[in-house]
Image 1 (cartoon, rainbow, N blue to C red):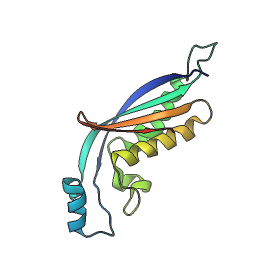
Image 2: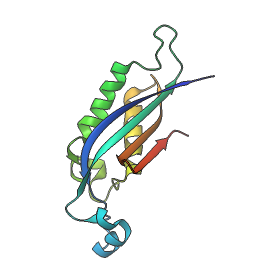
Image 3: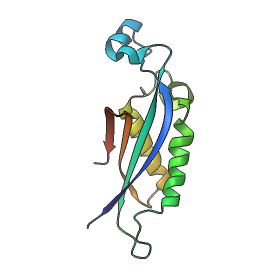
Length: 140
């Protein structure tokens, strides 16, 4: 059955650093380079969330944009904007998830899908740290 996709972009600014606590400083620097520096660094992130589903014959929509925007505000902007990902988001705290673009995209994908429930399925989440680097986490 054919499906339609819709992509909504949201932005947020956040700081992070890569560090595995079980590794020495030397191993962290060798693996993560400048991203392991102790004083963190920040990005102006762009997050594209693509949802997929059938077009509702009454509304002509794949998803109610008001619902999607509220979910993105709560699950992305309020959680990440002007935050230190390592310090402010428990799932990324010391010894847990490394706040890589890959892990942030997967985290957002899972949280947005959970919040949307069965209304529509999340097809992908694309996170861009800048104009030269992005990662996409997609449904299989």
